[in-house]
Image (cartoon, rainbow, N blue to C red; front, side, top):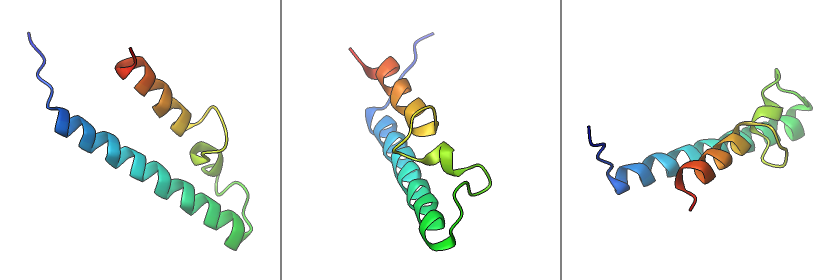
Length: 69
């Protein structure tokens, strides 16, 4: 079985996920600054781009594993 990949579709989904991560980070930062909530129901550490062991780090690791040379 041959797996056919459309490069434009792969780039589209990767860019879409990066935009999602950036929006989630902005929402977390705005809740921290404007709302005074540090954890935001435990979701803040999951989407903080300045930390490790979270979803953006997992995304970056998967990119290195699948697309790194």
